[in-house]
Image (cartoon, rainbow, N blue to C red; front, side):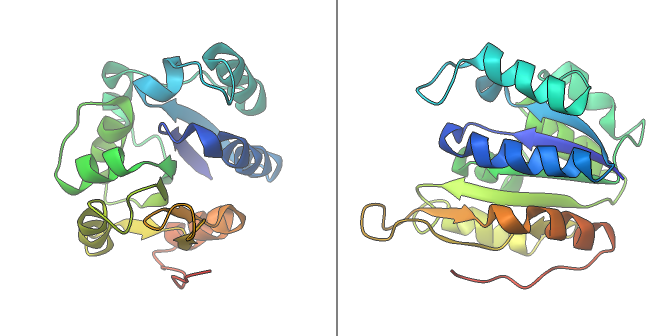
Length: 187
C-alpha cells in the first residue's frame, strides 16, 4: 500500500507515532512522510526537529513533504491509497472540519480527498471534549474520514484531553483502505 503519513504538532506523541511508522514500513508499505510546518521545524523537550526528521527519513527512505507546494500534487498524481494524520491536533481538526488549507498537512488532505480516497485521523488534543469536540463531530460525519479509536488519556489531570489508541492505527488504515470504519471505543 502507498501511504501518506502526516505528523502535526502533538510532539508528546511523536515517539508512539514513529513506532507505528516503523511497523507500517516493516510490513512492506511504501510510506511517504508529511509534516506540518510546525512539526517539521520546532525543537521541543521531546526532541530536536532535525533529529526527528532524520529518523523519519531513515525509517521510510523517503523525503519529508513539509510545504504546501510539495503537498498540492498529492491528489493530481494519485500518490496514496490512504492518507493518515497521526497525531492530529485540535488545530488541524478545526482546519480540516472548516476547509482551511494553510499547512502542508491540510493541503495533503484536501488534495488526497479529490480522489475520494480515505483519510485516517488519529486525534491527540487537550481540548477534544471542549472546543475541538464540534470539529471531531463534523469530521465523523464527512465522507472518507476514518478515525483511529480514541479515548481520554488522563481524565484527572487533563479532563478534556483525548488521544488515539496508537495500537489500532494500522488496523484503522487497513480498514479504511477497504472503506470500512472500525468500531470507535472509549478506553
